[in-house]
Image 1 (spheres, rainbow, N blue to C red):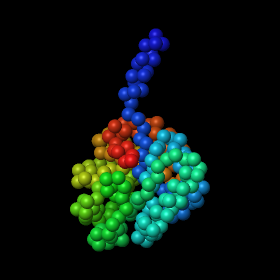
Image 2: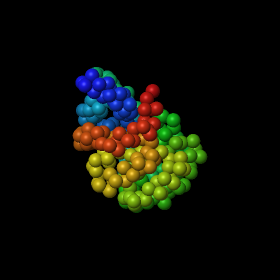
Image 3: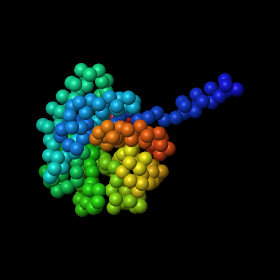
Image 4: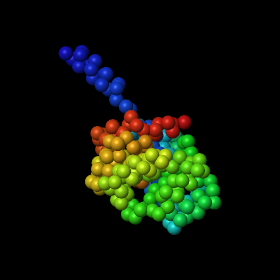
Length: 247
């Protein structure tokens, strides 16, 4: 009987979709947004992410016109510093950087001026909205991003309270070519129970193409360890494109 049990156990394990190994949303560059404060914090987060099986981290510092005024000249030296330090510390994980753009008037001005924006992979551009109020720029921004050759990725759509209970609107955005990226920690109610419900509904509808850690600190690592064991995390895996970003 134990022999038969081993056979069926092996078949079941082999049929499972493996965990993602590329994280495309985090805030681990030190001292430039609300993520890691110091390079030592950054290294701790990298070690933890590596222990979870990640092989590549695409970190995405906030860029906001009125608050986090990050530029390539700020972001990329920080990236090189982290790459150098992680190598010295024996952390074997690939690190790249892009940005998480806040959809505001400043961002729309850059789009209208056709300025080069920070992207990752196949010209993916990560953007976020206000958590409370719907943006008047969403439709125009999506049109302009697509027309300029970007592949827009909407960060954590499950967290926008004005869309809670309205998966129809997010399906329309998805159908217009916007990739929906859910935060893994949403799947354990880390932000709220309503956010968890929305994340699960989007996964059930097959609308989620990317999962991100949105890691800012060690508190998110602890939650990630729990969230990656949930039913909806495992359900989402077969629909994701995260690992196509592995170079």
